[in-house]
Length: 144
View 1 (spheres, rainbow, N blue to C red):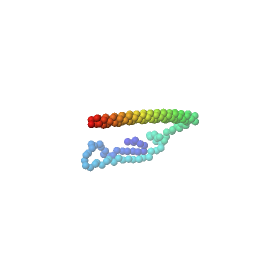
View 2: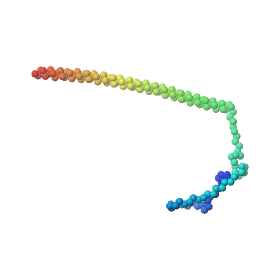
View 3: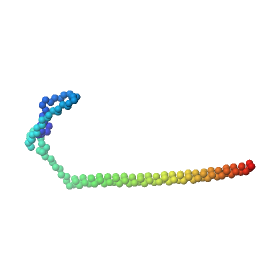
View 4: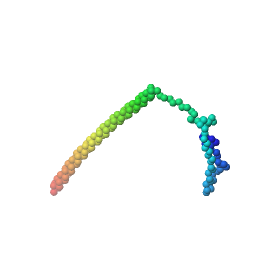
C-alpha cells in the first residue's frame, strides 16, 4: 500500500474487523507500522512535480495597459453608479422630509381648527348657561 512517495504504511498484524464490543473496558487499538524511505530525485516509477517545467507567460505592456483601462472603466462605472444612487437617495430624503413637514403642517392646522371649534362651543355653552341662570332667576322673582 503506497499512496505517497517515500511513505510506506503496512496494515497491523492480526488485523480483523469485528463487531463493536460494549464491554466495560475498551479494546486496545491496532498498531500500524510506518516506514519512511528516501525517494531518489529522479525515479522512473514515480513522477515528480519538480521534473515538470512551467511556462511563465509574461504580459505585454499593451495587454497590461488594456487590463488597467478595463479596471479603470469598471471603477468609473461603479463610481457613477454609486453617485447616481447617492443623488437619488438624497432626492428621496428631501421628498420624504417635505412630505413629513406637510403632514405636520396639516396636523397643526387641524389641531388649530379643532381648538378654535372647541373654544367657540365652549363660549356657546357658557352663553347658554348664563341664559339659563337668568331665566331661573326671573322665574324665581315672578313666582314670588
